[in-house]
Image 1 (cartoon, one colour):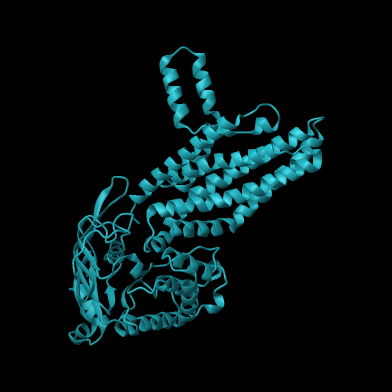
Image 2 (cartoon, rainbow over the protein chains, first blue to last red):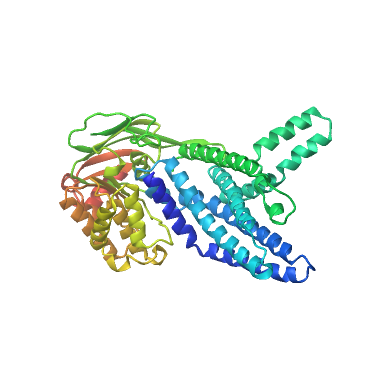
Amino acid sequence: MKRVAAVALNTFRETIRDRILGVIILFALAMIVASLWLASISLGQQDRMIKDFGLVAISVFGLIVAAFVAASLVRKEVEKRTVFIIFSKPVSRSEFIWGKFLGLAATMFTVLAGMTVFLFVLAWMVSHSASGSLLLAGLCVFLQLLVVMAMTMLFSTMTSAILASVWGICVYAAGQLSHNVLSLSRVGHSAVAHALSTVVFYLVPNLSAVDLRASVLGEGNHGVAGLLAWSAYLVAYLVIALFAATWIFGRKEF
Amino acid sequence: MRAAVTDAGTPFGEQDMTIAASRPIATRMLEIAGLHKTVAVGFRRRKVEILKGVDLEVHDGDVFGLLGPNGAGKTTTLKVVLGLMRPTGGSVALGVSGLSELGYLPENPYFYDYLTGAEFLRFCARLFSIDAHERDRRITAILADVGLQAAAGVQLRKYSKGMLQRIGIAQALINEPRFVLLDEPMTGLDPIGRVEVKEIIQRLRERGTTVLFNSHVLADVAALCTRIAIMRDGRVIWQGAVDEAVSSCPGGDLESFFMQVVRS
């Protein structure tokens, strides 16, 4: 556990100090501020525009960090041969993978927390309507991106960093749409199509199940029990993805 | 306690660093017998045999030079010893109980750009579960040893090649290992850097630490090593004491001896 913590702390330090991360955060904050302009031209919808646009900006820029940083995290260590240093010490492959994931998760939490609090303050200043649901929505974005990170790390143990990033983004997109696949299959009468859709639905992480944007905008309501159940499902999903990544990485030679 | 392995395992197991098997190797720090390594390369996974039956002995307290032309299999041999690669045949036996007693410096090391020298060493010490007080003591001592006290707070991306090589040696020594493996420790260094690295190896020898290093700089090998092995085409073609090598050659120097053996 100490070694996992050491790798995690090291990863957190490396990623949080990376200048590219700083640039991404600046862009995200600029986009959130840009929501003020959009709000000013949307009559009677200022509050909604700021929150909606702000949450989308947080998700999109968080996804960029999740997909691109997670893909390079393990790959870079192999290509730059820092793994020689790590694995010549008493560190197992699983400790390395888990440490890397937890370190990036800490970075992601810091980045998302900063952006969400910024959006919260902005919404409060403009319309005095910011509520705890906005912060909870930010937390759910974090959970969605943890799954994307785990899947991207899994892909990066099998393929190049660029391909792993692309696959990671695909997982996010598919995860937002997976419930639609099931709904569509119910429209037709084909048993095969329904079976296939069900398989796809269970294979692809259902990220939309913890998307609270509609709740924040007052268009829907997620029950606490349902939200907790879907969160547990996503945590289980990312744990399985990381075990798979560990298994594949453990078979590699350097 | 001895770490040993036969055939398709590594000296430290796959992931949990448990020792696969044991057999005593007396005063030997490393004993390699009939080591083979075949890798698959290219799209068609063509098999290439890198190591074709390496036999090697490093004694406790030796400063051992592993010599050979490029592609002879020196780095691969070190990687198999460290468990970074799995052998396809043969055996590796170590005179240490595990990776916690080993130090390793890879060739052309790259470290984490955004960490400072001290942070990097602290990270390495944590991987050995060294407690905080002892960690700080060792980091201070090692930074002084490699002459990097002034650069301890500087990020590694601002280090010169020589400084990176020295911080690389520092990380290899943070656990006070009994056996140190250095892959081309003099590569790319200016004359001052080379002298400094030689002094570090000299100090390790005085402390009784066993050192195995690869090098193409034969003058350094002659000055530092007690024993050497010469590899060519995946095999060890000669091994013995440096004095024996030099005295057996008409040229009377290691370079002449090396050329004679490699061309034979």
